[in-house]
Image 1 (cartoon, rainbow, N blue to C red):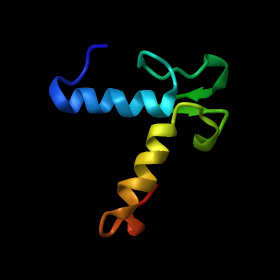
Image 2 (cartoon, one colour):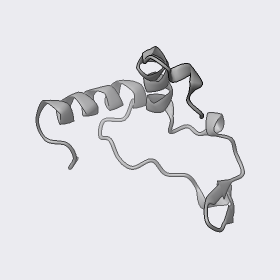
Image 3 (cartoon, rainbow, N blue to C red):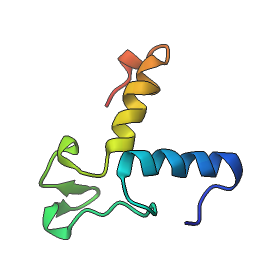
Length: 76
């Protein structure tokens, strides 16, 4: 996997593997059938919580972002 070099890159891959379960990280993919519309934004026919690819985002939000001062006032 090409990505971040050094300790930060290895740590990122280690966290990804722990949360994702696959041997090699790769790009997250959403099937085209789930695309509802494409205009100035891509709109999906499912909600963010239904996406199978956001386990790392959920973990980071709960364990890192929510602990930052003022995070409770930030928009989604």
